[in-house]
Amino acid sequence: MTSILTNLFDGVAYGMLLFVLACGLAVTLGLMNFVNLAHGAFAMAGGYVCAIMVNRVGWPFFAALPLAFVASAMIGALLERTLYQHLYARSHLDQVLFSIGLVFMTVATVDYIMGSSRIFIKLPDVLQGQFDIFGVGIGRYRLMIIAICGLLTVGLQLVLSKTRFGSRLRAAVDDPRAASGLGINVPQVFAFTFAFGCGLAGLGGALSAEILGLDPYFPLKFMIYFLIVVTVGGSSSITGPFLASLLLGIGDVAGKYYVPKLGPFVIYTIMIVILIWRPNGLFGRTATR
Amino acid sequence: MTTNAQTDVGILARQHGRWHWSEFAFWIVVLAVGLAFPSRYLIMTEILRLALFALSLDLILGYAGIVSLGHAAFFGVGAYCAGLLSVHGLINEPVLALIVAGLAATVLGFVTSFLVIRGVDLTRLMVTLGIALLMEALAERFSNITGGTDGLQGIDIQPIFGVFAFDMFGKTGFFYSLAVLFVLFLLARTIVHSPFGLSLRAIKNNPLRAAAVGIPVNKRLIAIYTVAAFYAGIAGALFTQTTALASLDVFSFERSADLVLLLVIGGSGYLYGGLIGAAVFRMLQELFQWITPQYWMFWIGLVLVVIVMVGRHRIHAYALWLPNLILRQIAGRKAAVVLTDNEAP
Image (cartoon, rainbow over all chains, first blue to last red):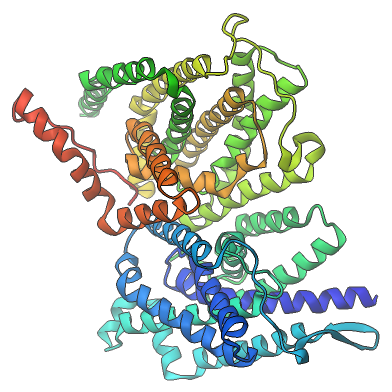
């Protein structure tokens, strides 16, 4: 019984992490309809920035986390302005090729600078170990992840639904032409959103170094997970991707624990079945855009 | 009126279907290169195999407009099938084993085609990718059959027709692959110039309109996807037979991604695109690996990004500029190689 609860807890932490990693992609892929397979590269950038600051420069972990966000967001903004924005109107094939090319370049560059082995980030003592609540083992680090990601999710939902920027973004996504006719600076909104999504991925990358492992092949290894979150979750709100991440996280942890050899098999089968059943995702709109 | 239209289409199709002298030249050059560099059989065999694999993707991407990121699934099934047939001594004749392996991939292609034709681009991408990952996970799960990450052990390919034994320099392998590629190329050529092939192009340009003029869109897509799976399976089987290897990486994502890349380099939507792309891609890869053995991926990635940023059409126009200039000098103003403008919208 307690092992089930511990697994559930780990699964929730894993799912939350996946959500923070992938919610930027939910906007670019789900809302802006840009197939960005390079999303994991931004997450990896954040992870490595955090690792360098903590391990080499000696910053405290909690100070390096915001920096991971800022660094990834800046890289994202730079690439969006120079490269990505020219490709919004291109075919999906072009977008796939471009982002795969970007992934290949990132993998080789990081391998060149940082080496190909897995990197660990030194954690402060507060986050190490676990404690028991009613016999259920709760890892401190995972508890922190749930706290941070939970706050972020609530914040995101509020920003999207309550603020002026949120309504501008939704308008720009729903109908870019009408939105720009109403005086909304659509490219600016897209650029800002893209950068923010990359920043979140960077933060997720820094947080995930402990759990998912950080090495130059990170973007390729977890690409499918990010894509699953977005395609299964659908794109009408961030609730869809959030629930999909939780499902994926819990399913993956449980799969690895109970049927270790069938783990990935189960995940992919479920994904294909869901996509066949509802091509726009579990919580997506019914009409294709 | 209708008969006129039909005869017009028929004449047009027959004109396009006729062999151009440059096509004869292409195959003569291929054969000549094969004879001229006897010390390079292994890499040339690899190019032929890639070319066949690319031909398979071209059929669905270039002619039917289905973007696939999981074509390695069929390659892998073909490879493992050929390997298992050989290891267990079920079919010792390589040509027969090749066909059986191709048919195994065809079955998978037929079954999965129903999943692929549903939904739009993005769903297709995800489903094809998912199928390839699924096959990889399956192969890993049943590592007692597939040999897991170590690969199949003890593949021993018998002589072709009991006469031509595979030698260590890869001479037999090369001519065997060339023959297979040529036969399948002829078949593909017939397919794309048939009314069936024309209907595929109509579907690619506008599925809704194609359906409106009476083309059974889904049936056609299922058919071409299944044929493409057969081609990919044969390419995989050739891989196993010429290298005596079959390991988990036959299903890898990189294999599918490289395939899309090389098809784009060569140009999709005409059959020679995959063939030329395979040669160019393999040469580039060899060059980059020679410059930086560990970091060649960076340069491949850069090539991809540049191709997309500059635009595929423009790149092909640049590449054809010099040959066209020479052609015009020799054969007059009108002789020029022009790519048809029918890449994925």
